[in-house]
Length: 350
Image (cartoon, rainbow, N blue to C red):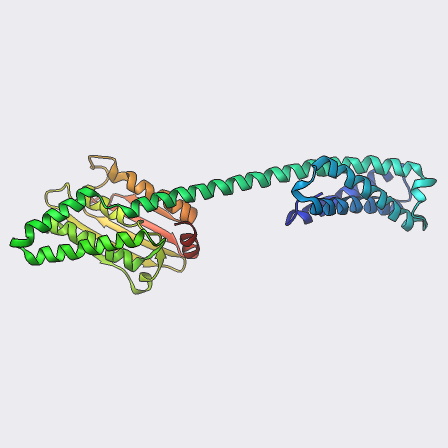
């Protein structure tokens, strides 16, 4: 008896081994002879029982009663196997049902032993299949939860940031109209991208770079010369698709907890590179660094924790986000995304 699919050949091999073992055992203790006839009987019964199990469980499937089906399949397979082996050994299909009753009882005994073995192994395989289904359902629930979290992130812009930006624009209208217009354009780009994210499940690195540029430009207008930034995206990386909101929390973390607390400010640099199978993005700043941060957010707060969770769910263990603090200060965030799984994973789970 086997589970359908890849397990069939494994159970067939086990049936073969069991038939050989039974034949050698019966012949070795002198219950049957000659050896060739013992092998014929053992294989005819074994393969008949195995085949009957396969047919019955294929026909009845999940609606079958495990032990009842196993007993029925063993009985039918035993009768058929004895008939076939009787024909091969003596030319009479009823040979073992008449003059050689001993073989009938021995065959029945070992047939039901085999039935018990296969029934228990089938139950174990069914339990493993149920466990795999439960794990798959759990993963699906996790993906749904991540999708819900993403929608919430996509739909929101921090009110404090939005109000401060609008206040800055209002203050610049008379004193710096060009700056006010530029900031308003960047805010419009940011808002448009946020609305777009609520309707789409994936984005491109070029789109993310545009959003990050607008965000940094707005922060630069607020902080003045205290914030400089640089974004480098090679041509072969700009069209790569990835899940949205993987980069923005890291950049926000660098600005708010790395650069802004310092009186002299600093610089944020974003660089992307592509290998044969990976997209690598490095977001670095020369701010106060992880060790000197006044809160835990710099080292991995809610935003960075969310990025790590989504990376694991979307791309598995091959994706990673690592933070480092160089000896001369600042923080480097290194993001790695596998390219060969990128498109399928994003479209199904982002």
